[in-house]
Image (cartoon, rainbow, N blue to C red):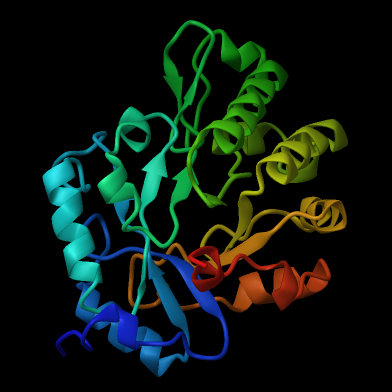
Length: 263
């Protein structure tokens, strides 16, 4: 399948919008044309948000030239033009305006966060190194502080898989709401509402948890649905995300809509 002409000629299909999808232009399993075919079969409008970061120059879109080529490719298909930027990589803050203007929206993600000594921690850590193995609550506070800084600082419209909690912490206490205490939830929700950034409801990671979603909804936050799809099974699959939104009372009126953002 080839592109469907200039992207200005297409309209999003009625129904759900999956605003976080990856292709082989970063670390996805499928080429762009196949991702578009799958989404069409499943009745879902896509936003392609491949990784744009210097953290993995072999697999990610890591230079301005590569980014221009990436956006050129997206313009040939009926998809929203997006990208997933890393909080821990300064590339998001160095883009020239002519490249920024070509996005329909941008996604910010916590793929790594800063510790007080200047080193970097990961939300995927399976074990906590010293001294954090004896100070897990402080470690969690540092992660939440980074998330609040992310949404207040990054020039993005969506924060992805924001409440991802390190497996090392869940090994100590599997109840995610114990780590995401009411006070930590309040801090994050306040930052999100203040910034106007949408909270992604992640089909891949099954988060955020219901209590935080309800609190964010009551506070007037915006939301988006994202598969974070890398595989054929994941792309344009939003069942869990849609159900989570319904449980929290989130409606279409609460969702970030890329085409409205361009107006």
